[in-house]
Length: 160
Image (tube, rainbow, N blue to C red; front, side, top):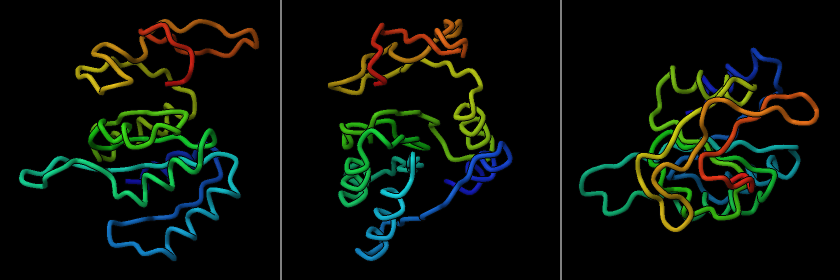
């Protein structure tokens, strides 16, 4: 993922820089991505980890999870695959599940990140943080600054 998402954000006026990491990426690639993340106001990690029969696990490489955790509150994770990867990055401040890598899902994520309404409830449990039904629902409330915000279905306001 990433090309369609970056294009969608770019056409909406956002400055986007891409660092692409693959399972075979080495330490130099991670160092470069870490430096880019440190220099950015916000780092968006678009990750595609898909379930494969016989794979043994559905997880990000440990080096990627460490990179995301290290970015802390200035990071957002978008999963274009397994929603369970959130369990590897407890430090990430925001999480969006797109479920699959398609041009439509990348366009929808770009629109959502630019402010389009987002709704959805988890049909699964992701222990220990999320229960079935957690998520966002339609009918956001107005913030004191007049901007629209979404309401969480679980009542939490901590961004998780």
